[in-house]
Length: 142
Image 1 (cartoon, rainbow, N blue to C red):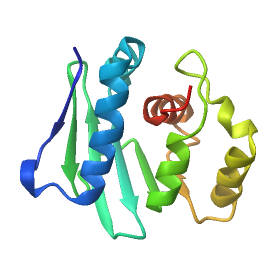
Image 2 (image 1 turned 180 degrees about the vertical axis):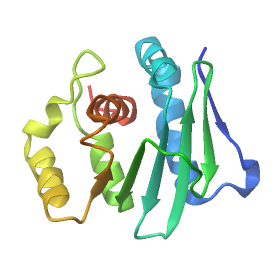
Image 3 (image 1 turned 180 degrees about the horizontal axis):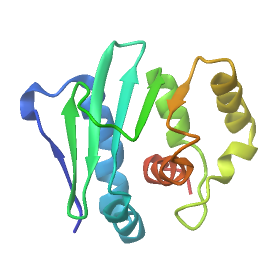
Image 4 (image 1 turned 45 degrees about the vertical axis):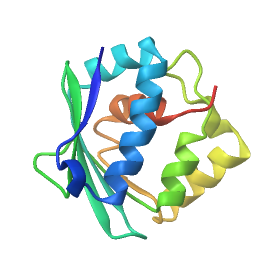
């Protein structure tokens, strides 16, 4: 079973706990998402601009490690509010990979936030498949 670990344990920040909760529940409930996470093999930084907290997610074939602050290198860096993160978790994904939720009102609003620079995804152009896979992992919508 693919595991999710908080590197900072009890010292983990609120963003780390939020991401841990989302991903732990999704992965434990869905073997297909576990397989997807095991193939990610990347590092993603998330900057919660409203709480001023940062985390780095390091995906390996065996586990995901969530650590406070940023580490280098990162393939993708997301700068968003916690509301943006929660909205992404509500995007419908089919077959555990295709984020069709971007074609909804909620999805269009997120796209608008990206286009206006309020929700940033650095690395989207270079690593679009990793971004899509991450959206699939975070999504709790069926």
